[in-house]
Image (tube, rainbow, N blue to C red; front, side):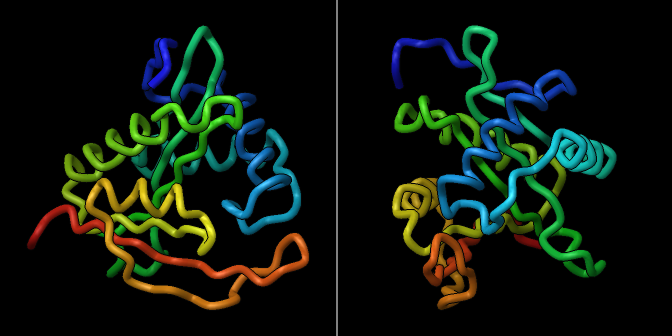
Length: 170
């Protein structure tokens, strides 16, 4: 971790422009989001309102008044019997990667999921994203699926890996 002070807190509406910038950079420059078109503020607002109204957390990492990362989880699948399983996301601003911020954003998600008595957390990770894969391994996630060539972006086929963390036994 660098010398900068990073505050992890629940997101507020005023954080959406920073969240949008981070997410759109990921869309346009990485394979961490299997989408090709930037999102609008209205799309992020709908996303945020959906998360909050569903009782799901949205956390931000902030330093010097700037949003440098965010994390959240939501429904894994919409069918009722999946209600104890969530899929999460963690994104960090390009200028702040490699400083341990993903770890700071992932732990509160796990803690909140346990508080909510959820059973399992899923990470969908691009097959080539070794850093995210190793991050999740360090938190106890294990690979449970490897889907070959299910995405197509930047002129190439992409593999998708699912990693899972069991939070509670029933």
